[in-house]
Length: 277
View 1 (tube, rainbow, N blue to C red):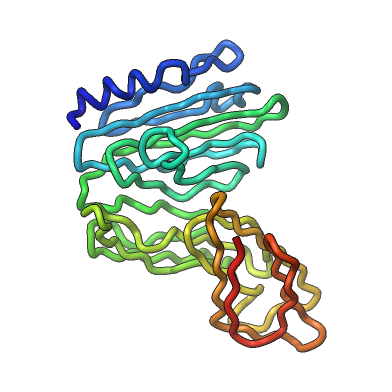
View 2: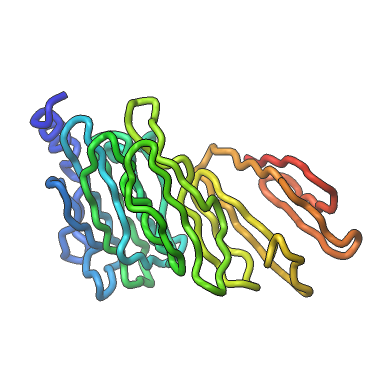
């Protein structure tokens, strides 16, 4: 489909989905090789009852990279949904909320859509996202992580980059990422960007298609009186799988409890495998 036909179809789709939020217009069709998208009122806070949809569109065989400069939404109540394509449920890529700066997002095709909704009370600063059109042979920068260092400046197919953390912080996730070819002859990093946590701290909310969790100070011995809770979020209908590569706790005294849709499980044994819907 040509770019002109896409624009015509999107214009028809877009009728009625750009809603004024407390008198402020938001959303729209976005074109150009690069630019920025901000929540209404940014950086002074967004309004309640906002309902904004942006559709970023580029030429055939190009893709779109979205990187966040600022991100602060009322957790679990104000949501930014990102769609890999038009803003349809089947194209939902991820739902973002809270105050953690998301990793960069790259579309698989020439359209990327954002849908921002807020509830009736409480707001935060909002978000500012930078978009850039990518040719098909590059993965684009996976982004700098908080308290982390990105090693590598080439992001084309076959290139590798590596992350490390500043002193006093421990890397969680895959340190090395490789830009690989996707089935549609595009390009994508083989793992999501990791994150850095402070030594001795533990727990948090994890998103993304894969990652790693470790006890505090791992592979060294964990601290006494630790009390850590991790929450892994997936899209409705997805399954979360946990594969333990190392597992050693003081028997009878130290426990790892895993809960999902079924009754919680208490684990003390060696390597195991766990799935939850």
